[in-house]
Image (cartoon, rainbow, N blue to C red; front, side):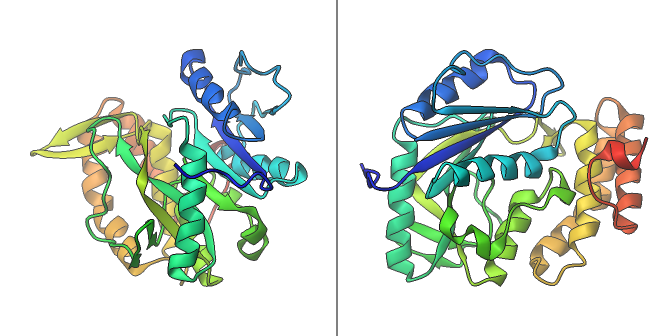
Length: 299
């Protein structure tokens, strides 16, 4: 498949949070042969043991107080920039990639740039849901442009996202105030305000776990996350619906699902009271425009 131009320098960032050693070691091993620099940002309370940490390619940073996904990605991107990388690719700890993932994704970004005649800030793979074993396809938000090597879309998830670092100053880093949920989407929408495009490859596929597990109600499957994630999900909806550059379909969809999601999490899941408490606190903080980690707002 496509080969990386040897004059280009590519780095990768993996954000960690209490991963199993086997989970992360496989991803690290695959990336070490695909990139020039590998930055591991560990948000775990106790540092994760990494068997390949002795490699000169690896940079390890540990933040036991958890700086969030946005802060971790920003630190990693800064390391890549300091190391002279032209491109950076972001990963969650549970993503599974092929041995030629980076080179193929970079080739598709370069081809999509020519086909669309646009500045492509970032491109991501097609995502295969680990739970359902099916490709994730948006039901409402369709792609903006279709091309042979990929599509121009409104947003992609952060894991597997390849970024053209030369264009990063135009849009800026990820928003640390959001902390975790909607960080990737907000950044993509902000990029489009600066006339930069977001792509998604048609041929590069990545297995990825979204949420902790799947549940179903009345024959409809939905993803379930940890109780504290509900705080960020509800809060960040209220933070983002106020912004003009956030797509209207996203605002309507998420506002419309707030009550059903509240009922499903309050009635159909374990830790019902805890989940209700986090959702109510998220709504409160969102209305009062509070940002940052939960612990800073509810001590």
